[in-house]
Length: 292
Image (cartoon, helix red, strand yellow):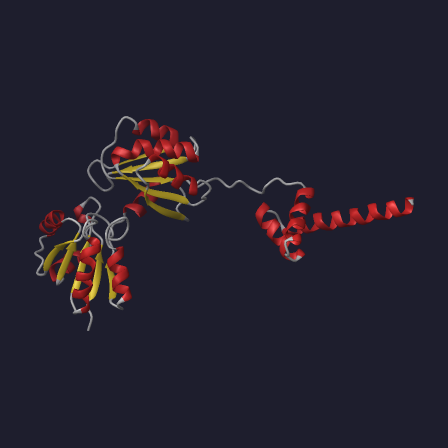
């Protein structure tokens, strides 16, 4: 019988947020794989737990090499607990490779849910949370950072990012350039810790604040792009677009539907424009014939 891989969420700040199951799993696992064994030691001491199993390191530098070892342990029936420094493993932390490898071997994977900086920041931001996307950490190089931001410049869902404090000012400045100075955002710092702070405001204002220097763990929440509304296109342009699609081989009905979707207009409006142009063409043709 194969073992079980357990992804354990750990507190993002306040140790009392640790779920009861976390202590149970730490005490009972055959192997505990930790992003930082020193931080794991502080965690277990705070929880009053002594792991019975073997403790190994599992971080970005040895993730590729250690994954096969842990999969072998799992295949042999071990219960392997994976913990990272804060939050849920594999969410901008080590873990994805191990999960993927375990799934490929039909090994059971489960989780101990825990605090999430993503969801906590979203809830505190004051921005829409019905639809959102998590973008993780942005690239460190300025050009690559701008390129990544431009990819989501028109994204209407709320955006969530992790960022290092020493890069926050550059990131907010780049967001101001790409998203616009007035786009609303929230910088969530040291969530659930003693000096927790949530700074809300337009991106330009937040960028000016961050230029003075910011410390701590950072999560940035940015408002999605505004709805631009239907594109303003006259009937002649609608007809031209339909004609181009027809000449490319699309049936008229399909062409009308596609043009309507592109322009954000009702299909009936595009259909009426096409019919009106067709009738106008017939009338002009009839008039020319009568004149001869």
